[in-house]
Each structure stands twice: as structure tokens, then as C-alpha cells.
Length: 272
Image (cartoon, rainbow, N blue to C red):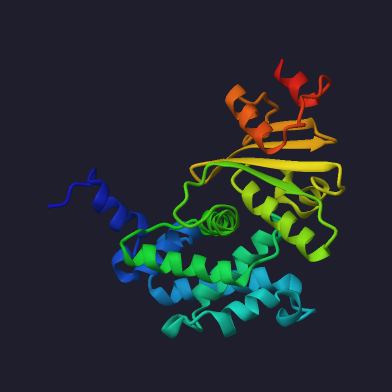
């Protein structure tokens, strides 16, 4: 006899009405945890398929007049060229997952989708589900890979990912673009405006500007923006103005011995 108060019984049966978890593949279960289709109104898996197909069309609809190839090229490459989804290759579930998240990355997080990072993220999701996970967070895993790729450029393999990274203006347009992309990647997980392309570029828009990010155990902790070696902004990951702990300011001076606090620094005034 099953007891209604038993959480496992409730979550595996009653909350899903006629379409129970037992009738879904592990990926579809995780998909439902992510997007919350009304399973209590569904009788069979085909009903879920129809729901996803309709949602896919809703996401795609604003772009129909342009054609998917022109508007979402990274999505096309990801599905048709880069991802070997085997039997899932033409699955509407995977297509919806990729399409929706690329659109979210563009609109919400101001990122140009990177196909290689999307591929890695999808592979992570598949592996975590294979290991028994019933949930996934596409953007969190995506941004973790962006950050990790950037960190590999500044810390050697096997080296502890602790310390300051200095960013500065570069006359070479390609290198300047790479610098701003690294600033954006290392700003993920924070509330900094430098997650966007505009402000990551403004952070190092002239030879008088420097931008510093402090990393601790691979996690971004502080940002310092300077002009002519004077601090203009000092921010924690919540984007609150702050002072640097004395030992961190001293370690920053080892990189730039000329750096000084600016007495009228707005970030310092906020902290007083």
C-alpha cells in the first residue's frame, strides 16, 4: 500500500497525472523539469511531443520572414554540422533546447553564441543525465565553460587559478577584440556591466585605461578599473562599490607599482 505522504510516490506519479515519469526517457524528464510542460493534462508521450513542437514554432516565429539560416546561423551549424546527436539528431526536444538557449544568450546575456561552447554544454547535459541527474542549467554550464576557456589563457595547466589578471588597450583590432571577449567571459557569474560587449570595450578603450580582475580558486572576486593609474571603480561580484582588502591591493601593486587610490573615487564614496 502506498502512502500519499510519501514524496517519492507523489513526485513519480500523482504530480504527472496520466503521463507519469516512468513513461519518459531520462532526458525528457530533465527537459520537463526545465520547461514545465503541463504533464497533468497529457495522456501519452505524443502529447508532450506536440507541446514541444508548438513551443519551438513560437520561439522561431519572429524570425520566419528572414529564414533560420540567416538569423540563427550558430544554431544551424550546431545542429547540422557540429553536434553528432546520433538518434537525437532530428529530435525536436534538442532543437528546441538549442534554439531557445541561443536566443536567450543573445537577448538576455548579450553574448554571441559560440558553437564549440554550445557543443560542450550539450555534451555536459547528456553526461549529467546519464549519471542520473534530473535537472540541468544550460546557461550556468555555458558560462562556466566560457570562464574556464578564458582562465586557461592566463593560468598554466596545473597551476592554481589565483591572482590578478591585467587587461589593457591593444592597437591590434583582433587582439583588442580577444581582450574584451576575455573580460566578458570572466565577468560571467557577476552583476558587472562588463558582461556586455559595450562596457567590456569601454573598460580598455584607450592606452590610459587598465582593467584588472582578481580570481580566487578560478572564481571571479573583484574588478578594478583605472585611468592613468588611478582607481576609478572597485567592485565586488554583486557590483557593490568596495575597498580592496589591504593584502590584495598590495598584490595588485606588484603588477602595477604606479597604481593609486583616487580620493574622489565614486566607488570609495559608496563604501564610506
